[in-house]
Length: 281
View 1 (cartoon, rainbow, N blue to C red):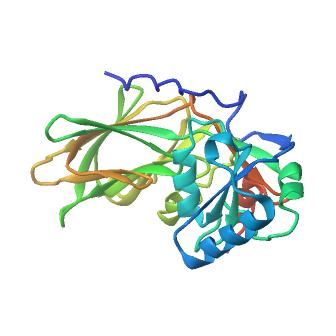
View 2 (view 1 turned 180 degrees about the vertical axis):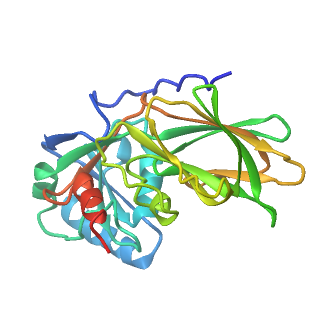
């Protein structure tokens, strides 16, 4: 049985012909809502910006400005993923791959000149050992990890067809293009251009088959990962920050019903950063 179709959003965002597409300038953003991570640097930035530009409630805002690092950006994307609100991040945290540089001056002008990148999240449906189902979205990746000293044993199906009868490894992850430079890259997965209709399926420390390095899949594919020997080799599933322990099966697919608009300064777009990342050494 394949994963059920993603749910339609309660509030549809602006039409998006393709994930990762740069749709040009942003337009007028008069009403700004600021959200900040709890750290002092981000909170101080929020206070300064709110004094200069005001700070409306998110539901009445034209744009959400997130102040922090990539963790805060992921939380903001998930919090507002059904609102249709564009998100503009400024780096006031640790890792800032998804963020623009922080500057107090001329924020509305920067927003008006910004370029829009459209991304879709993954939808994870995890079934635990008791048969309960847990649904979570992930903008970076869905990961499965061994919970004990023993390696996980996993069976992988794509569109209901078995592709790998047994993977013995620390785990496996499925990444979006936006998340391909995050954990996926750390475990030697491929970097995916932001406008590519692909997902990266990457093993984590594979033991058998040792030479399997993963696969690139169409972003319309439905991936099922079945956990073998769940009593002796328990596995946890994580969708960005949401964890489900003792899973027996995990179904993953990209949720094209949800389209998030992330704003970047000219020359600082997500596709440009992903391209630059491939030439790092």
